Amino acid sequence: MTTRPDSQNQLDALRSEIERRNPAQPEFHQAVHEVLDTLAPVLAARPEYAEPGLVERLCEPERQVIFRVPWQDDQGRVHVNRGFRVEFNSALGPYKGGLRFHPSVNLGIVKFLGFEQVFKNALTGLGIGGGKGGSDFDPHGRSDAEVMRFCQSFMTELYRHIGEHTDVPAGDIGVGGREIGYLFGQYRRITNRWEAGVLTGKGLGWGGSAIRPEATGYGNVLFAEAMLRERGEDLEGQTAVVSGSGNVAIYTVEKLLALGANPLTCSDSSGYVVDDKGIDLDLLKQIKEVERGRISEYAERRGASARFVPGGRVWEVPADVALPSATQNELDENDAAALVRNGVKAVSEGANMPATPEAVHLFQRAGVAFGPGKAANAGGVAVSALEMAQNHARTAWSPARVEEELAGIMSHIHTTCHETAERYGAPGDYVTGANIAGFERVADAMLAQGVI
Ligand code: NDP
Image 1 (tube, helix red, strand yellow):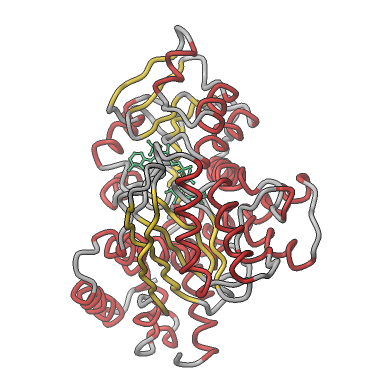
Image 2 (image 1 turned 45 degrees about the vertical axis):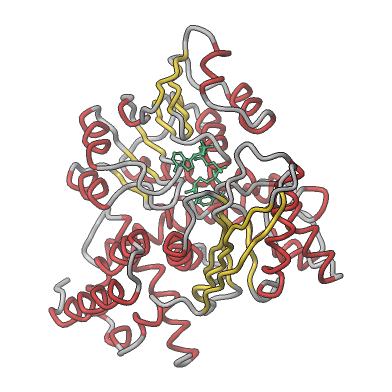
């Protein structure tokens, strides 16, 4: 497939314009560039997509909300955080995407996440648009009562912007079942409505879906296995390095073990643990889910097979498969070079944009199967959409049914990315496949719905 130079010129001009109009938002620029870099063949092949304004509209959020979140700590001191909700694109359905509570959160981070979410949600094949939100609040070291007061204050503003047919937030970094509970309670109190479909990731007894906590990690492992199967292999007996030790990482480890693989590592922002016998899932869950402790405690309690490496990155540990599951830009070119040197076969992104562009190029040049987050970690939002479907029908599906649906959706995403990449002359390039397939679905809906 040849690329018309005018398509590339159009995309290059747009890229410069986006940088100019969105200063000091490097993560947003990175996410947009990564998509625009792959769209020239589809704009050349389908002239309707090159229509002035279409890609420009796709790169501009429909709505951006920023608000003050005042709250009191247990000593009565007042803190002021900043809340965000970026409603990026609703051509395919209500805005859908998580809330992140982490001190690094700012508008550029929320926009990068919202932009990624638009393509990811399109790839699931379900009727969900893209959005993202959060706050620079840091839940680490805060009591349950402080987290509750923060969530209540956050929702006291957010409630007016969301709704089951409008915008449906979920969890992300720093927002798990506890936070979703406090947020849902406050929404219900303010609106006087039992509107289960307004938030996903709810508790099983009050509108949550089976397999939602597991979905992102499970889905990413299924995606990694699908990539390996394309090469005549599977996960049985393979070693894996996993970063992070939160929701995504824990259920990545669980699924790796279920498929006969051997996860060797986990990490948090203080460093990583490597366990020669393979990660002990029960101990990991006890420390991280029950006690909310630090990953160093895993090595202290596990015995001789495990050690803690303060400040280190898991990528220096040799393994067959790498599953980054912590945060953006956690795997750079040097890390990628170490993984390739040690013979890694597949890298699948559980986190959003964990590999830098240089790392991605290095993997692709080395012939490593690389699954981008917007495809590989879409299992979480897919099961969130299934949670919404169950809420609308006032029913609850069995874990077996949800898991079967998840497996079907991940297989569909893998096939779609694989076939789209081949169709546009980039066989085996899941980045191009995911970007173009997601783009086609959203762009078709936007063209049909007119200039809005
Ligand atoms: P959690 O808050 O449950 O866990 C995050 C983990 O990553 C923790 O171990 C945390 O360590 C570590 N981490 C976070 N920020 C940093 C940082 N700046 N440096 C080093 N380590 C860090 O979040 P999730 O597991 O839900 O999310 C992980 C990733 O997966 C994110 O990129 C998220 O956007 C993505 N994702 C999540 C989905 C979901 O369903 N939850 C769906 C799709 C993608 P520490 O505790 O020390 O901060």
